[in-house]
Amino acid sequence: MITILRRLHHIAAAPALLLGVGLSSGSLIGCAAHGDLDALGPGLVDPSSPYVVALGTAQDGGLPQIGCARECCVTAREDPSRARLVTSLLLVDPRDGRRWLFDATPDIARQVERARGLGGPPEDAPGRPALFDGIFITHAHLGHVVGLLQLGREAYGSAPVPLIGTERMARFLGSNGPWSLLFDGGYARPEILQPNETLNLAEDLSVTAIQVPHRDEFTDTVAFLIRGPERSVLYLPDIDKWERWDRRLEDVIAGVDVALVDGTFYGPAELPGRDMSQVPHPFIVETLERIAPLPEAERGKVVFTHLNHSNPATDPTSDAAAAVRAAGSSILDDGDRIGL
Ligand SMILES: [Zn+2]
Ligand SMILES: [Zn+2]
Ligand SMILES: [Zn+2]
Image (tube, rainbow, N blue to C red; front, side):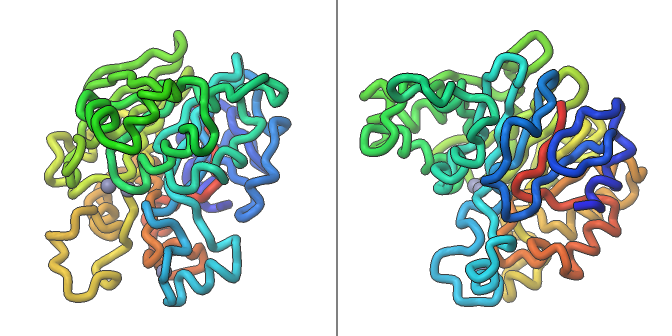
């Protein structure tokens, strides 16, 4: 974590925007003590500036993953500091207490607890107020939409929350059970944000949808670019391969301050016997190779998230994690915060 602070230090334009525990001012990413996220509280938040916090950093199946008897998950079951919830981001505007969720994971109940006190409705609000001012959804795979079901009548029974996604996403949710019950029962309502469209959340806070190639069985897939008063953060948990994108990764990195990108697999050794070009994610080693010619400041913007349980870089003491750091990039941890 210290390494992340150092690596990203140079892109911190202004001091003290950063939040979290024990941070040096000017750092871009703050973190909680790993495994102690539920202890995060409102006292840690700079009241003047929006920020994002990672509520989870694992691939859709989480870490530990169901039924996995290999060392990756045995270790994570024994040592909670090695566990990761499924990838999700919380955007908080402490100026008025509004907050937005990015992706609704199978871990949403625990993630709502992690988000307690970070904006949101007052604890003593009557009824079942919406827990978020909106939920941005990248696509319709397990890790990104299953959590929505917790908002319906069988569980939270939420006041209507805007589900923000593309037209195809709105159609998917509205025409497929059990999600359709969210709209039918008034627990949620669709809000369409098409690729290249920007939703202004405040005068100096906005979210833009960016189409990315991914296994689009049910919906298209988007990344989200979050722009705050001082900084911008790209949230891109899933993409097939950089080469299949109609944008150049290098250009995208140049246009943001932090790029949270698909780090599902570290390298081909995790998938023995599979043709590397057919795996629908960029391996971390491929991304590092691609950005190797870029200046250090650009490489330092790249932060990997959405890590598969098999990914050795989930262990900060691994050679894989060390290689990511040596390349000038970093791995996102649950609880990391980035000031906007
Ligand atoms: Zn995913
Ligand atoms: Zn495992
Ligand atoms: Zn996916």
